[in-house]
Image (tube, rainbow, N blue to C red; front, side, top):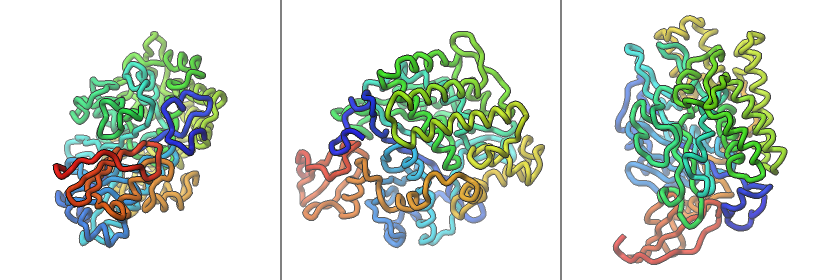
Length: 483
């Protein structure tokens, strides 16, 4: 890749050989006692300094959060545990880093005094009322500031609303839900603000933020913003990857001037109502419904994805893209063909159950309990659905994925990312500071995504981290004792 010896400038995304995209994933985990009840004090156990040290994970921590030496960040978000991956290069590494989070939590529970059960699931369902409470799984993709405008990325909404291969699925009393996040999506589509990002029924499809509005993540003078996709649900490694890689490829279409014809094709697929479409796709297990486009045409979710997959393949032919994106584009066309067979009644969902998260869960539960129990949300179906997503101890879903799923991300890569940061991003520089507690002469005082603060006596200095620079940067301005 170009610019590999220097921090990658935003302009590199406009070239015939664009760089690997920086991607980060936030996952909310459910932490429960062995009997399934909620424990509001889990952070005092799992994030205690002695637990972190005995787990073998070097950390810079307080009582409520921890930055780990693999570059990740763990903290309580309302009642949930949130694991934020280190900044990773490309979809495959970002998904490996997200699933390394499962192993990190296993370590913490092993040395904790509490035998917690931890779930990486998209939602919980009240067995009595049927109420659904979703969990966060947010995909963050880096992009040049110039493209951080809701009107520019709006064509992505057609893609996000119809990603039938990228969701985890959930048993509900309304019927089987392919995409649980659909129940939370509201009147806001893609926005540049954080307004209503947590309101039930009002959550946006995504948040696009230039660096000038995103100081918590990016520094303005580096020229990078990010697109936060909020329609995702945690799933198998393959489905998580496909959700990330297909979105990244379509962002290439928006960013790169060589793909202007493909950009026009993408714009022509804009939905009339993205929110309504996602909500209907979410409960369309037969994949038979059609949806209105902005120009008056109607297409099914698979029709839209088939057209998008063609655009994605054209991008791989015109640009020199990273290997994982080329692999993803080919898998995109393959899975659409297989889902077509299911749609036409020529095959059952079992042909894609080894990859597509919701299909694997639906197939397993239907065989165990009967299809009717899954569709009406029986008590047993709800219970088995929730335990499917348990990662500590390892639940049926992860065991099924490990046994049946494609081995496209080596297990040793996931294992390595439990203790080591990705080598091509600022996560590596952050990790080095955390491992050493600062520098030989300075103590680590504060850690954030774009900044590190070092303290020597009353003298505090800020270290600014470029997203693509993994080296230890020079010290910045001196702040004095006021910090």
